[in-house]
Length: 128
Image (cartoon, rainbow, N blue to C red; front, side, top):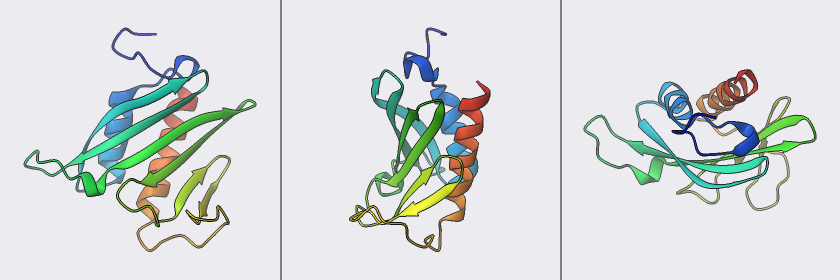
């Protein structure tokens, strides 16, 4: 594993590429990916948002949990500033979940960009 990627152990987590994927899908924000935790096969990354002037926009931050279940790669994407917002689980396909009950729910109106981010992250990690 390259020395500038000290994360995710067997996930071989490319933080810079995760930030770039967030830039593409979660516009107009510019992102930095910061590792919050890593343990064998699991990690949590904060995708920190900034505006085009470089000012932090913490109310647009995303939290990305990446984990394996058997041989399958799964992720959970949530909006840090809104604990009531639905969560996106992405395994073989995307499923929106109520944050309080964990039950499936309809996609939120602005859910398409987050689903695109989930697909990009899974493709990035599966191909790396």
